[in-house]
Length: 492
Ligand code: SF4
Image 1 (cartoon, rainbow, N blue to C red):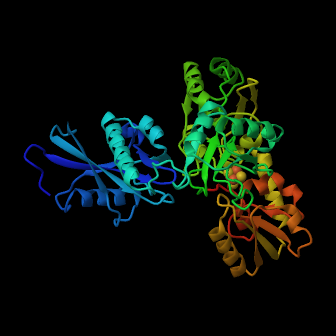
Image 2: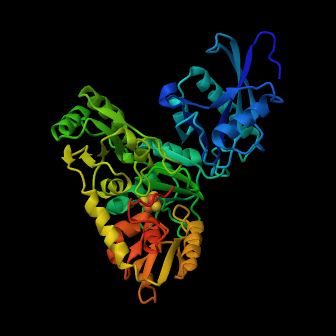
Image 3: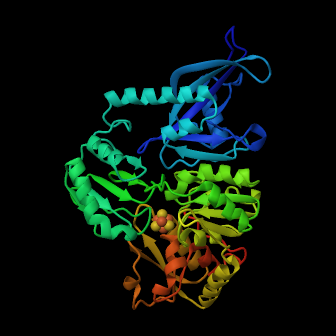
């Protein structure tokens, strides 16, 4: 394609987005190119038929997206001087992709992130990228005004949204009122069940619609009440969790993340240094303490620390975030650090993190200001390997499958079944929504492999009548994988 008279080089950029909830895909350039967040972009080749086909080619090369997608021109372009001193012009497009799309990055980028539009805007490095993103949102808003199925609309007829609210209070009530819901269900984690009744009353009074309490506390961040457990409810309020971007929602769900304001970053950094934490650390935090990450990093840097924060895969909403089944934010920076520091309370995440990475995991409680020494990973792993060894004589395997949207790995279960059978084992699938040890009593099964939440096998296996292994452990047990290196069962 020929460049026009005033321009030496035409370029294209694509803002990939997915709906329900609306998310924008950004990619990160590697250190030699500044580690900045950008959309996918590239130069138009003379052999490209037009701008759209140039973008399709770039997207295929840089994200693995198949070329059948139709880029929508945003009628937005910017001129600038290219690195070669010539006159370049960049044209922006929006490209809708399924919410299940996972980019396959080329060497041009070293990370990707699916982000809510406002987060994407914060992260984009160039102001013209931010302008183009604003233009995309404008186009989507225009569509929303003429198309009731658009993700931008907020009526109760819209597809389910994930609405994020930092903490309980007026912002939540205002969002609920704006949603015009008929009936709301409140779900709380086990630690807050005592307060659930009063919280429901407060929400009911502030919003003016019926609120019911989901009587079953959530098992984890991916476990919401089903429509049959909460009939007539058109919105959920979930306390204590962030959305999991790759878990589909059946109703608009308000995630009250219960962000904590507390914690003195300077005092915490002093404690870290006095405790002997190595100077190159990766930082991982629970959702509740993510607001403290930035000032804490600054305080650590003032004391000479190099702190790395990783971006995880599509199961994680935020950089640095920990999820019990997914520590890809840590794995992304493991090669650059000597230790990890977990910012949060309790042992659940430090234990999971210790399984997932091979570097020492320290943890600091931001509220108590106490630093816990590293967990003995070797001991954790040896205990699991011993359990694997006890199943070596098992001939009859039960493969546990959960039908919960955020825990359903049916394709994995079928693959495991085929692999076990090919090696002469008897392997049957056991399917239910929630995995409950009482349902497995009295069965003629030697051992189980759990394809649902991986923490069931790691944390609760003592409750089960037979050994329960994770997926990688099962492959060890049937001789398909070596015992070393031990692999955490990351739920992607
Ligand atoms: S799979 Fe388990 S650890 Fe992961 S989000 Fe669900 S409940 Fe939490």
